[in-house]
Each structure stands twice: as structure tokens, then as C-alpha cells.
Image (cartoon, rainbow, N blue to C red; front, side):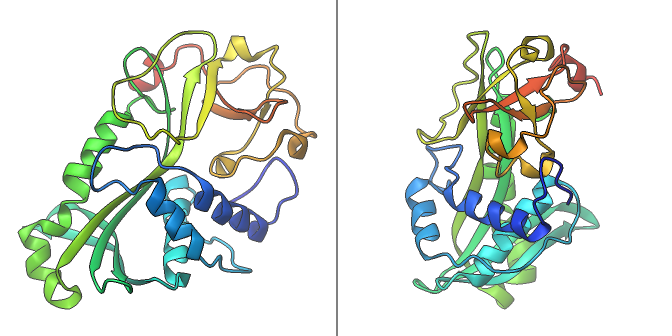
Length: 267
């Protein structure tokens, strides 16, 4: 996973990202499956960050994020990783995959965790992502009502319960950042956001020309650098793809192509 904004090594990048997700608030609230700020704080207070390791997996940010959580679970004194990415199928039809099965060493219970790193922008009455076919309301509903319920499916019970035990707890760990428009008054949908959710601003390409923003590469979206760390990068003038950027005051921005979200919904 390459870095573009400075001379950060792969090991430094992993270390920065571990620290970032241990400090990053949840995006959502209001559902018993959602890992809230209290739970994340408790997890972080006992977490052990692995030292001197590099990510060797796929380039998608979601793969990297899942690897970060896998490492944190593996090294955590209160949890034991039992299984990861369990594929569930019925009659050769894939139902989905369970991200993590975790043994809570304090309670002795087996837990099912789903993890996601997401970025959404307020537009009209919705929360589309940089790829506007992604949508916060739809994503949350899918993860809460489908992904986390895979471990209650008869196929899972039949195939895996004897091996791992009955699932006693389900957790959705969804982190990331929500962005409000800098030059409009869109507020997004009425989904219940966490009060602590990390925020940023967004604008269109032509609006960004005079803001002196500096772009960052997608691998840094989890742990955005400070503006001074990317001083070598030229200021952002125009974009053809959704681009995360940092302002001189260190606020995080998204700069979108002029026809977003309609253009990405047609792809």
C-alpha cells in the first residue's frame, strides 16, 4: 500500500493507522448491535499495538481496515480471535461472510463482529459515499439486518456452532467520517449518527480552487496527515475523482467532481 504525501514507511503507516482507529469515534448510534463510544474506549484502553509489522494484503481500504482490526483483536488481552472471514453458503448460493468470531475472555461468550470504514457526504436528504451508489442508510441496514444475522442463520448454526459455540453478542464496528457541504445547507438523512462522529467538509472541484487544500492518497484516509506533513504536495486546483484533502487549519475535506453524485451513480 503506497503512500504519496511524504516519506512514511509501510511500518509507520501501519502504526499511524492502528493509533487512528483506536481513537476514531463510531459513525452511528441507536442500535444494540452498534459498538458505541464507551465500548470503543474500553477496547482501546487495553489494546496492544503490534510493533514492526507491515500490511501485505489487497489495495482496497476495506481490506486494510479489516487487517488492522484482526491484528488488534489478536494482540488484545481481553479477546481471542476464533475465526475470520467465514464464508456461508446454502445450495451453492453464497449468503455472505462473517468478518470475525471472537471469544470474550472476560465473559466467556462468543461474539460476532462486523467491521467497516466508511466516508459519507451530506447531499440533499441522503448520505452518499464518494461512490454515490454507496449510501449510509442502505449500508447500515444491510450490516445490521443481514451481515450480523448471518451467525443466526440455520446454515451457520448447523455448520459452525458445534465448533465455535453459540453466538451471544453481535457488534457492528463502523468508523470513518461524515462530511457536510461547505457551501450548501444539505444535512443528510435522519439516520441516528453518533454524537462523537468525526466530521469534515466537502465541496465541488471549482469551489476548491482558492482553498489551498492539499490532496492525500487513499491509504491515508484512515489516518489523515497534518497539513505540514504534505507541504511538498502542490495545492489542489481541480479533480476528476473524489479526493480527500487537508486544509491549512488541518481540517479534512472531500473535493468532488462537478457532476457528483449523479455521474458515479450511472457507472
